[in-house]
Length: 394
Image (tube, rainbow, N blue to C red; front, side):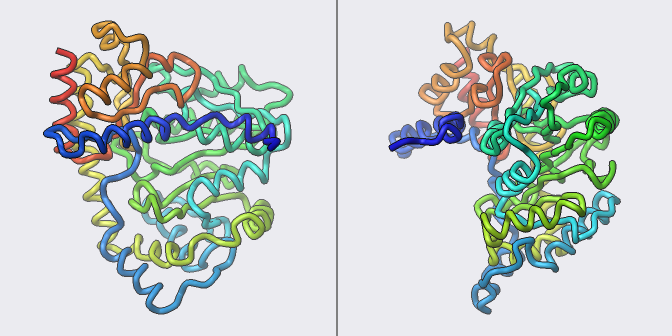
């Protein structure tokens, strides 16, 4: 059977390939004294709060399960709008918010609406692999620009300007970022957007970890810059609804009917039950619970990062958000006689029964040096993982 060139361009999602291998080993050691600990997937160990679960059950019980508008339930768009106002002090009219089938659908819709065949989109290296694949699926070309720890592994306006060419359509950024957990400084983001806008380009910003920030200097949405920033967001991370597959997209007014038309044809609508459940995310007791959980994520970060540094798994930039640690494992590889981060990850899996993610997925620049740890797991699991790593590296 002939497979399209488009499909052939999509590389394997190595995060999930490693997860499959970890799952096989996990079954083998499930009843041992050291069962597998998973620090490889960016999924909160918290589930949706009680009020959200109750709202989902009520929707099913009451038969509120039929199609909604392609842009989502109007009350949900209003509540998202109100969240921007009360949490971030930014006015985002509900009419510019399109509820989607997860952030993945939001990225697909944005890319299909804005990218022509051959258009180049500038992205930082490292960055989340699926983002560049959405660009590729829309017949565009993701151009990865190497970044450094001194740049917080984020693009600068100077690098964007230097890389801008005749085929460049815009930038796709992430703040906070997966895999590094770092954010773009608001002043630098403003300079990037001003340059891109001046060239008639588009600023796409992955903000799916918005709300999970731990530093007052960051943690603000870019939607306060102007109404031309296109923001992708999700109920998965801050709102702890990963498997519910619900997200949203904020676009300029003139793009709403375009995105709506695409969404009608590609998705019909997001999950109706998930939408009704998400209405309860914004209730005061739900927000209070999310903030308690955010404090727990910060406590995990504050304990875990120094432990990695002490083991020689150096985290060159303290993550200011999300729940990741982007660690340089080259010292550990040299100590163990291991070639690179890919082999190191499998060695850790086999010997310590801790699943982590090698850097291969996230870019092309120095990826053999880095591994990603997820601190979305419990403090007890993080502590046990450190003990196992310490024994392995001793």
